[in-house]
Length: 224
Ligand SMILES: C[S@@+](CC[C@H](N)C(=O)[O-])C[C@H]1O[C@@H](n2cnc3c(N)ncnc32)[C@H](O)[C@@H]1O
Image (cartoon, rainbow, N blue to C red; front, side, top):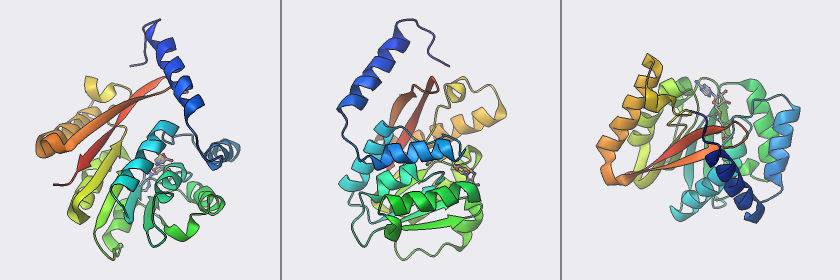
């Protein structure tokens, strides 16, 4: 569902460029994106606007213990880790060693390595043995979408009351809305399940990634 309308697309792009020009951000974020490109790691990271939102949500919720599923290059991880207090922890899970190697360098460069535990392996396996020293305050789910149900259940089970579960890519460029394959129907069912179960404790922020002409969005759930 790329934006077809001749007027809407330039409008979206100009609004995002306007925002990017105003937003103040640490130069480390553009370094991470450059390094991701140079090292041939897929550019599947969240947008800078989403990064600001994750950082703000972690700050507002006073998060000390954050779980991330899907590290990639550590871009979203740095946004969240920078909101942690000095005794906080980002626990981030990644299956791909090449992505994890870049993420390690990124966490060092961003000065947050002491706040991050990075586990390499299939997240479902890692979660089976993960030892948490207390309940989670926030979780960001952004890995293999067919496991959204499993990751979300884990986060529900380990989240403190008032904590936040955030799921990225809930529209997959409109394909989840069209729901024409079993995979998309499953993701659609997942979204509907979360909205039905958590009602007014759920919000979604749709977002446009101009580099990919891609309309997607995040789901944010506050645990009652
Ligand atoms: C969309 S990217 C994550 C982007 C990252 N959160 C960011 O915005 O910077 C998804 C990542 O999940 C990883 N992944 C996919 N399946 C996984 C699994 N079963 N367990 C752990 N990580 C997985 C991929 O290798 C990829 O690095």
